Length: 426
Image 1: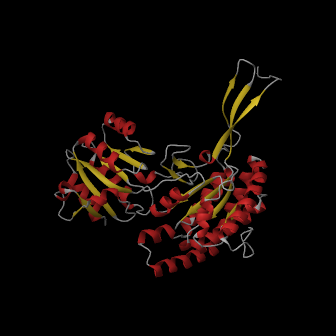
Image 2: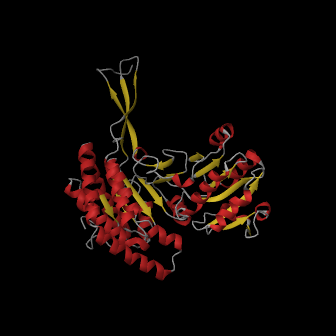
Image 3: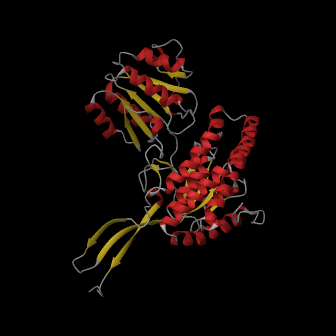
């Protein structure tokens, strides 16, 4: 593996993270000095190396899957973990796609001329060293590394134990391609220890790591947000709603709802609550279609009346991210009722409306305060690749720095450049 993270690295978690972060800082300065074209070319080589390493990566993933099944991981967790030829090819394609994206580094955001002749400009620059703490999904290893490198940042990656072999194999392939393309090896490092104390060391590495991005379940993200002494870019649950308005076209509503819930149940963009307008005429058929497709439906009293197979929902169901073929369904009395339900229970990730009424749709888009708001589309589109961003490092639901899919621009900050002609301040 082309990295300083080897068996000779310090065994103490704090010392290990310090060593990795200091090396990352040095490498980031070299990386930022490379031209945009050089960084892009290195990523193309990394994509090629990942494709060439497919047999090794898939063999490593098979080891992780076998261990996960033995540990009793849920079907949704195993789906997140699983790689096949198509998924691995898509990961490599995403690396190459990011290489082809416009580089935000050096972009002039705005300029101003002061009366005293000073010329001011705000210019995008890399954030620096970014720590990514993640679970289950080995694709995050490639996505995070790629986005960080393209935007001139060094990355310190700490994946979960359930994907340790997959992450190691993916990282090794990427590192080989990046180094061949002139990127310092230490610009992308994988923490070589599964000791949970390494997570704590990363969270308190103020001055060494500039930003932490957690990707994982609620308990991981909550811990990161509670314990971090480093700025965090994160979301908690993906408690996403789809509201089927009374003016929704039934075939469209059914198609969107089934896709939003069941296409992939284990992703953060999956629908977890369906709101059905009490005046929607095809409500029984909509609920039946979901159940017939293999979804367990838990509903309020009015939803239960739509189909005898609906299970009574508990209070906790409305605030649960199932990440499985389970769905909460409530019947609401119009747009105001739907908006109120979403305001109480949404996690601010992705919420959608299905309607043929343009005025109602515009109100929904304007008034729902989530990072992503959709009209007549499946919430499964909540993804950086689908937004044309190439890949994403996560979907941020906060209100500062970045919101929604975080890709290249979200991994930059800016600095002021001031150009004068000898001015002094009176």
